[in-house]
Structures are given as structure tokens and as C-alpha cells.
Length: 530
Image (cartoon, rainbow, N blue to C red; front, side):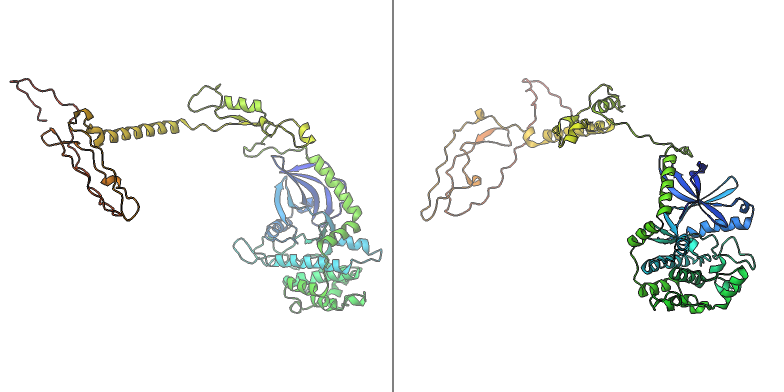
């Protein structure tokens, strides 16, 4: 995509900066542009600007808007995408992705006078991309999934750009036709460059995808031979040659071409659309099977070498534009504001921010944060000389303090749990009934007998449950008195026999915690029945 002049002073169009021309056509001029964001984001784009004398014609304005609407529905790497449309100051601007490279028309014009041709694998790679891009446009659908039946109707070397990345792309859907478009073709008006118009278009037959296949075949024929297919002193002469259909195969001009190419090119150039390839993808598959394709890296290197001056000039313009637009800012819209970069934080600034941080529990702002640790003491040995030269990075952090509501709820839960534990402890029998004092016992303790050794096996000891209780253990009776229990000898334990568990003793009757004082003799005591 060669440039025609140096980038001029920027003109602000919405959020875009408009610079000098890249190329100029019959309907619009393509300019360099930069997308300028309110937060420092920027991007180089191509902006198509409708010629001023066309802005007063509603048909051309409608066609220009159709290009944006239709091209936005075509999504393929081999199609230059449309990014935005801007209408301001009585003008319309179409924003497209910028592709650094050169158009096929400029390449052919440069190689023709020197008698050179594009290498065959590169030609096959370029038109494989073109045909796949056209097929994507033919298959495009609306938001509701309805086929748009897009036909480019202006496929020519001027609308094929070969990027330095090695990918060829189709651009300029400005004269495309689709169902439901706002602009309709005037009766008898031919769209597209005449030398690439299909015969049915000259006969006023509706264009179809086979129309684009025909135009792509004309471009392929010219790229293979390095010649123009239809030439004449006037448009009438050119139109007569197209209708006559007296065409020669590429090998008639270039004998060293593979024989398999002639049937592919001539089928695409057939006067009857029904005899052509049904789809652009079908023609691409036939081309890929007949000729080995060059990889994108090879195509990109060839373009950079062939169009070195134009691409270098273009790169210089891009550098100048990007440098100039680095100081241009766009004011925020709808209350948006630019976000400044935060200053670097140090240990002192972190501590000050922690002290000045407002707290919900109204603690003093000067209180030091809890569990703060300084990272300045970690890894004090530099890993290298470069690390030692840099200033030490010091940071501080602290554990976040819980909200006061969480602290209050936690305290209430702890108090409730403590109250439940106290109630359970007070209601337990061991806490209500005191154990009798050892001094009140009237009997003496009797030492238990030692275990009897077994005669036919190892020693057997009684389990704790079967051990004899100490003699004269006081037992509480119903009358309230304490009587000693009679001592008895421990039962004999059979060797290797496990004693049966003893039933638990009956629970003693609870006694009041504080007994009332005894009434004096002859006194009358009243009790409260409640």
C-alpha cells in the first residue's frame, strides 16, 4: 500500500487523528490514522474519506455506508476488516485495519516494464488467499443467520493488498451488492473497473458469486503472464472484447507454465456463469492442487524485497505519525477520566498510609498496624551486581483488621457458650451431691488379696471391674443414716476366665445443697407450699 505524500498535520475526527494520504480512488481517499484513547491507548488505522463532491449525492453516501455494514459481517484473515464509521462535519469516514504492504496493481506495474513476473508459487499463494477471502464474503450471514449473498463486483489488482506478513487480503467492498441493502444500483449502471467486469454484467444480468470468480480469474491471468488481458483505446473496445470472449490460455504467452494451470484459468473465464467454478473455494482448491504454494514467510520476504522503497517510505511515515500522536490526547467522554499511574510506594509511604487509613471502629489513627512485617530484611544479599545497584525495594504489609460488627458478634457468641457450659456443670449430679467425707466412715480399710497364680498357664489378674471394693464403704440409706457395709472376701477368679461386668451402683439420692437449721424443741415451723 504505497503512500503518495508525507503525513500532514493531524486533523481530529472523533477519536481518530487523520493524517496524509495512502492512496486515492474514484470514490474516496485513504489516509493514515491513529486511534487515540483517553487512557493512553493508540493504534494505527487506515481511514477512507469520501470525496467532498460525493457527500452531496445520497446514492454515493448510501453506497459508502453499505460498505461499512456489509464488510463488518465478513470475518476472515484474507479480508481487510472494517472497524468503525464516523460521520462528522458533513463528511463520512470509514475506519479500517491498517495493513503494511503493497497492492497487486503496483507490483504488476513495477515488474511489467522490466519484463519480470511474480514467481509461480507466490502467485498461487496470493490467489489462494484472495479466493478464500471472497468465499468468506459470499458465505457471510446477517445477525439473524440469514445469507447476505454479498458479491464484491470490484475484484481487481487495485483491491488486493499483499502484507509484509505474507498474507494477501481483499479490500474495498464499496460497490458490493446484497439483499436488503439501502442503496440500489441505477438501471444500466455498471459498477467496478471495466477491464475486470464479467460478460453478464454488461448484459445487465444480476451479479452472483460466479461474477467474482470471473474477475479473480482475470487477475490471475494477468499475474501469470505479466500482461493486461483487455486493452483498448476506449471503453467500447474493451467491452466488445469482453463480450466476444476470444481469450488465450496463459501458456500461450508463457510456455514454461505448468499445463495444469490452463484448464483452471480458462474455466474461471468461461462466458457462461454456469460453466465456471461453483464457488471461489472450489477454484482455490483446484489451484492449490495444481501448483505448490509458497509459505507466508517466503511471500512476505519477497514483497519486502520487491517493494523495498515503498515499504521503507511507509515505515518512515508510520514512525513519524506514531511519534507525533504520542502527545495527542482525547478528552474523556461521558464522565470517563484518565487514570494516572500510581507513584512508587516505599516503606515510609506504606506506613503512613496504614496510619492514616480510616477505621470503622474509631480507633486512633496513630496506632501502629498489628502483625506488620517489613520485607527489607528478607533477601538482603543481592543476586547480582545489577541488583545491588538498584535501590532496595521495601514494602510493608499487615493483616486486615476484622470489622467491629464481627468482633461484637464473636464476643456475644463466646459469652453465650460460657453460660451454657456453666449451666451444664451446675446441673450435673456430681456437682449437686457432695461425696461423703472419709472421716465419717466407721469401718477400716482391708487390703485386697493378691492374685492367685494359675497352675496351668500364665498368671491371670482380675480386671478393674472385678476387683474387690474396700471394706466398710459407707452407703446412704433412705432414712438418711450411713451404715457400714459388711466386708466379704473377694470372689475367686477362674484362670483364663473373663469376669462378667458388675452392674453400676444405684445413684445416691440428691440432698439439698443447704439444709435448713433444726427448729428448737416446741417451736412451730411454717413451710411455704409454693
